[in-house]
Image (cartoon, rainbow, N blue to C red):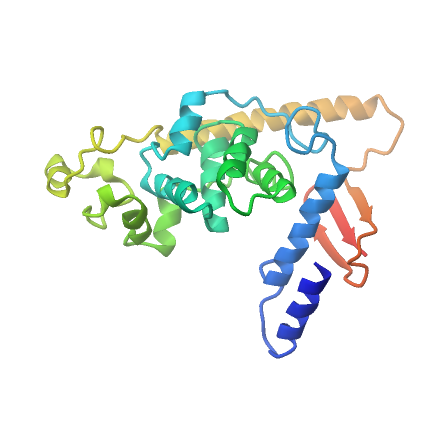
Length: 274
């Protein structure tokens, strides 16, 4: 990391204007160290039970939903295209990882982030214990990020950057003839359009495995219940102790990045690299 950082600073020195953390490449390097620190300091980092920083959420153990997600059979073209690319190439863009992780967990299928992390471990060429598990906790709102009411849409999210659905057409060629109007929601196409495109929904390509809008709202209610239970348990536990009830944990790590003071903050963590 030191060598990478030094090289990056050399590149930055050649330009008066460049991106800044946390969205820059420099910021991504800091995030990497943030997750490495937490993976080192956290018992049972790779799972929910026995993990002191992970919210305890009653995920389902629906193996059929998990398998459909892994095998690109959810009926949502954007999700299925991403998972097809993952299985085929061993890599997907980080925002694509966000999309399918949210969809599997709190967004739609309500399957544990642990199961999703194992699938990523299975296929990703860049699979990394610290980054993979940390980001799955993040996207499932189990740790680090807690705004569970913010949910990725398996329809609208892809349309923002690829309104024509070219990504879907590449990775799901059976849908390539669908008009732009229906490429993200082929089940809405009239039967005549489906026949003309040579792909009948429910026959050649699956119908949506869930109804996204009501399901995501139901899952938000489940998340709120889990958070309320966590809050009540924490309050009960803190009242029985005489120690400080501060919700901020300071993690100090004497990492070789000693020349790079940097702060990464989240709701419950203040991470100091110094």
